[in-house]
Length: 215
Image (tube, rainbow, N blue to C red; front, side, top):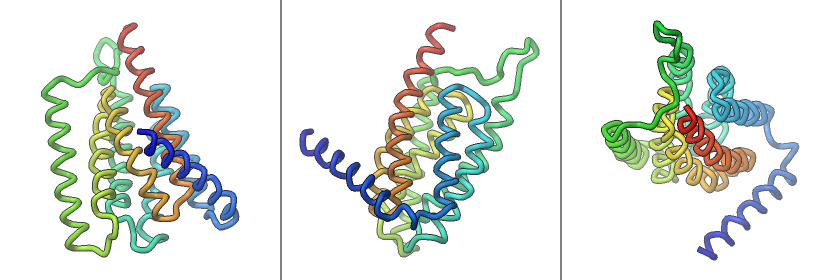
């Protein structure tokens, strides 16, 4: 545990140092994407539907960066952000829906046991498919991590669109892997963004739990 904490602290210092040294080299697209995605997660914390329009901006730019601005590309991460785009449109619609009594059609709730089981099967199956594709059909040099980040993010976004509290747990796993993955790909600003996301995901989990307990 001590070694892990030391490694994490050293990586954080290196990320901050890299951002400082390469500040001018960080593209405008990466900055805009980072700010938009952080805003999106902030709105998610607040259970605000603006999570989706801000997310659409951020993930669209991120997909472009992952596909066309790094080599070899992070294929699964790029596809993930296309999935985010589609699910953001669905989530935006779903969060605005109301029942006949004007209560939300999708309030914050825990997933049922069946929903959790199906969700984990979805994540595992997604990982197997993505890993196999990356390993045998692309020039990816990070197939395991890229597929893991993507599979747990697919699950997280699905649960987010349904306002399920467990979405934050899926994102905790995804963000924890995405931090070193983006660092390895020299995307220092995105690495820092995922550190912020990890902290915000834990905060979101706590806040959404409280929301359900008082309702």
